[in-house]
Image (tube, rainbow, N blue to C red; front, side, top):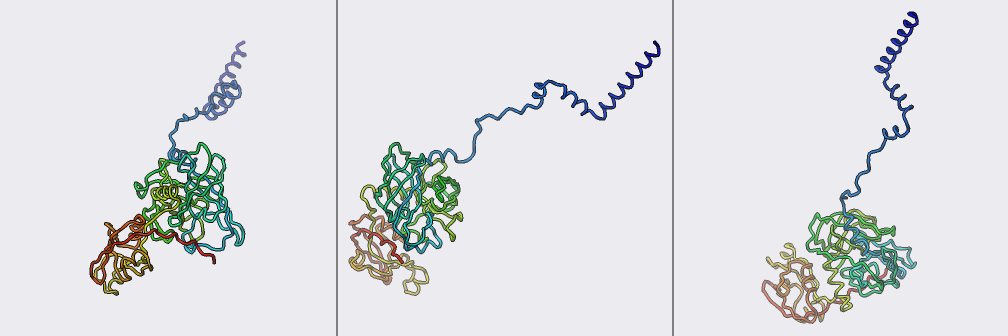
Length: 387
């Protein structure tokens, strides 16, 4: 009996020693054994994933502005006669319009437009629909309609269309005059006919002019991506309000380089109102050809320190010619508005009402003079000639 007790004590001592060694040097062996023997539910509790985060996470960005504006932006397909000509300034300033098909084939142009009233009035670019025999509009909700052309204004590159559908989402109009450089903006359109696309950027510059794109230029410049198919689409602010109509890009290849131009909504609203009411935009005209009066030119013509716009030519039987204005005169004021550049003179005269009277002030050979003019209506520019 004593011998058996001794054997038992030695076995227990060896077992405890082995357990101590394993616990100290290989504790993972014991953990693996416990996991093998543990119930499945207990194992699941040990490896359970943390709970999902709450769904009410505040998102950064412009999703709300996009939701407000996007339903009002449409895609436009315009069927045109075969084209044989292109605009010269497209070499640098390209219209983000669908690429031309081969010469002599019917043209199928793709652009964008913006619904500005619930009764179906749309704004787009003149170059999107110019010469089109058939204009089809597709809404963001999938509906389609034939559009009727209300009128165009080539000198600002704007056009007004009308569609007959119900429950149309009109975009809220913003105030381009309150824009500042650095403000965030979104460009919405149908680039490359891939479907409605929203791109973001900032206002890069304001009041861009003398680019040779349109006759009347006062562009909003933006770095929001504008590509072929975006013509006539919306430029909107961070609240989803329309601030411009995307029109042109600076590009040597036809693709986006980060310099796009939009017509301010204030100008677009005025043009749309005139086209809807009268079918034409009536602007003043006095019939003069102008040149910028640089200090070098003033010295060469012996005009002294004259400040204003040099009259380079006068159209026969135009208001200026009938009033007595001559080439070489320096025009310094139109009504109550001083003018110092050809662009200022153009804008001041265009703002005059046709058939009204206006006094203009000039300097002729150092002598101040004034003339009364009967303002005429600005002639509609001729369409581009074929090659």
